[in-house]
Length: 384
Image (tube, rainbow, N blue to C red):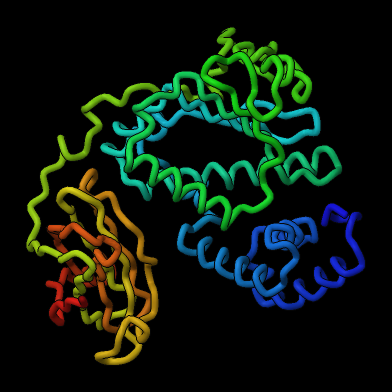
């Protein structure tokens, strides 16, 4: 049995019913509540109900952190990402699933990561995926059957050494992990086109003929063996698929932005550095800017739940992530929902060999009707 609606074993049907009951409290906050959606999560964890529940609850927190429900309407990627990150949605396969193209060859990973933050790329991928999910919903309504997966064409023509750059590989890995943890069972089939463009590795044979077996010619761009063009006759359908290119140096952040930071600190290998700020007014804005020298640095924001306690006594507000602030300085903020002692935590515990110098500025801004305050720091603290 496939584990899909209409094809469940009696045991799987029973697990689905139990799972729905166990997540009833969060169902209204999920993007869908039907059985098709819940079964995707169960299949991803082989119908282990405990693991599936933990996974979907973690996903809900991810959605809140990423503001996934409104990311399409409320957030626009930086210009350099919109112009130079290649790929896009174009057409539908024979079953009605949207087709997404990842065009790897023209991509300039180093130029991109010198021009925008890794977190912006993650948000862009979340935004793209949410758009594809909505497209699946539209197709389901249009065709009268459930459409929940996409076809991915991964065009590797021109793949070379420029793509095998350590920060880029790390970013790719984080994006793949994000997909696996938050958008399970969303890929129907993958066509991987080799550099020679003579065959599709996954299915073999002539790559254009194989594509046409699964995609009608009128839904496939001319450059990929179909008949679809842009209104102006462009065979690459550039209004739907971005082909990227080399990022001009004018976009490089470190070349154009010179920030004077208030303080700097060297964080030893295997250790962390913390800054504490006493927020007394709800809805105050906590803003930070930082840059690291030579390598990335971990960063997260917490609120203490117990005076003088350890990290276990802190509530996670902004999950700790590794920031490529040696490439692009970080500048961000959060609105503090309630008063308390907020902790900005720079984390170098994962580095076994290298100390990191971090330059930073932190400020606390009151709600909009107040006056600017100087940040009241409760001091810093190092943990070895």
